[in-house]
Length: 459
Image 1 (tube, rainbow, N blue to C red):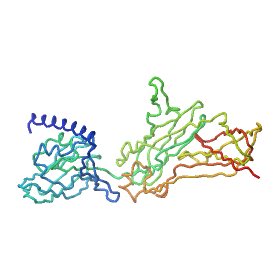
Image 2: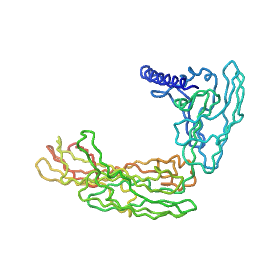
Image 3: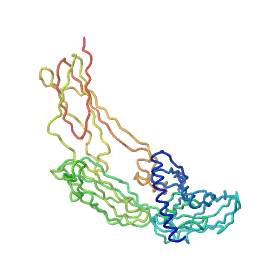
Image 4: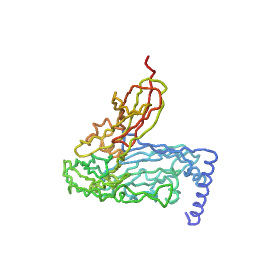
């Protein structure tokens, strides 16, 4: 294709893209295309379904510019493979001639620019190498993918074109399913040897106190693996609020408040502990959010996969109790219910002896102004539990667990994951008609709710 024709095609594509976006916005129409979707049982092949909307150009525009393409059906239009270096995989692609005349097929690779890594054409072989397809005829092409033993890990994407008239990759790459082609996505990987058994640390801490945390790493491989944990810079970044660009807020403390102790290696078949010590400044307020980069020298773990999330919230301690007034219309018994909830605090705290259960000091003043201490009638704990189907502790690494299912140690027995825990205390006091004052001083909580129930007067 000449440079002038290429420029013309790109201008047409841009114009049609604008028209398609405006048309979709006005008419609310969607164009449905085939794509791929991952099933949990099979790792090598994923099949999903994409619906073209704003910002997605329908392949029908390419069919208008290359009318011969609408006569070619390629099934599947997309294939996803996960292979280790040195592995190979075969799959079949069926091409059908829907035209009323013969079509010459000459399959080959079109390298597209929008990919993490560029695949070497020698990795993919297609048989037959050429075929004249009669009207209505179908042909099965056998595609063999061979990954060299020294291949770089990462994702590769390429188009397999079945005619010679496909434009260069930067044009064909604009389309999710360019007609006359199928897209091959290849993930080259190796199984990770190190399990990160502590995916995050989330705690409610007090100003002026010191806390220790243990991050456990297990090496399931046969060789020692080096680590070099270090805190990211997130804890020192200043964030500006959305109200005013001139008034900013900072984290409660910087990374200098956290010290890290770690071995140089996680020995084969053993569990290592990375110890964090947090010394909360006496004047700290607010929260801290950052990450610990474990820098695991494991080719099966990408950089972003070796991060442990750190989140700390300074427990606000009010000096005075919360007060509210209410009116009792009868002399019936007054029931006061106070509740608070927590989510995931205190995980991975060394020792595990901290009592983070919320509690309340509740008092009343009756209509005459006399202080009354209500009796604690009951204490209730209510929790939420998720039933999980994952053998790997990091929820954001589900695709890793799919690869190594059965080889990793189950997390929480592979069944349950705690969610929010709610603490409820109920108090009672003999009632009297008139205006009452309720005082609540909370402990170990950032929130609480209360309800007041006034019973019928006793006869």
